[in-house]
Image (cartoon, rainbow, N blue to C red):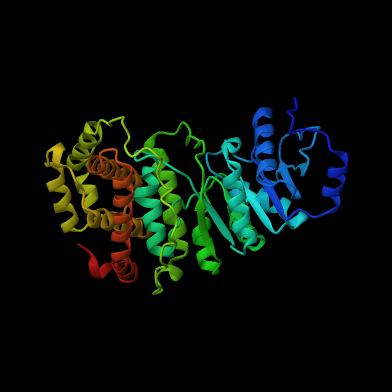
Length: 406
């Protein structure tokens, strides 16, 4: 590998790093040589003069960044190369951390060379300040991360009482006990040959009573989810989240006060106030209308009459007035969650029937915000509030599902 000025051989510093335990361990995904070099340079800038241990599954560079000790680890479970860390990645990270016992563990996902030094520093500092789970809140545009905004964030916030904007993280900082807990959850999945399964760190931390925080992140390259079609992607992520919620039902059903969101800068959106690229909403609206005609009988097995009536009205609403109420969207998600738990219909068919409803929400959201970043954030917070307000509904239906049958 070629070296840059920051990648210079420093034998004395390397020897000192070997003898002094690193406060922070950074566990990297597989990276190309240039990306590994860029990531190491960013880590050097983020932690100048501090002892840092960096673990990579790739061939370590022959030259050391002055304050970094780079080691090569052999994954105990092959990393699946997903767009976010999965069960295998959490297990591999803990395997390395257990040997070196750092005070903070940074687990970076794909495209880690784009993680700014400021973000790396904030993540590690928050764990060293005795937080167990720290997740970055990366800037996104008003047209980005909509599945997270529609489902992952509001559902996690309502049920697990944490205002963490991106609960399925690309990167994460963990305390030792948090890393161990996630590895324990991951071990069950990898033992079942499901190393590519998602792990939900916020839910695990909530059940354990660990502290959770998100911090401002600088702009980062967001990995593409892969070649899966939208239906498969939504089914995989939603099914994973619903399964995790089902296993933790005894926790989230208990009455709990929702924590107040921390006072943070408005870093959830990009600096530009408006996205100048309009989105054609017609295909999404037509997909929903066709689905209402073809899937109405199936939806009637999942949704109560009031929701079906609201969807009927929405299906004939002109495109210029197309708007899904936040309360309706929250109720739809809760009813699909319950149907998933009760296996009202085949789970694959259930999640497949959900996609047109999600597209209807996206069309409604994009029409409402019209590319305005501030309006997008306000609506996302309004959606999350609707989920919180309707939590008694899912708790009651979960405990007594027959009493509420349509």
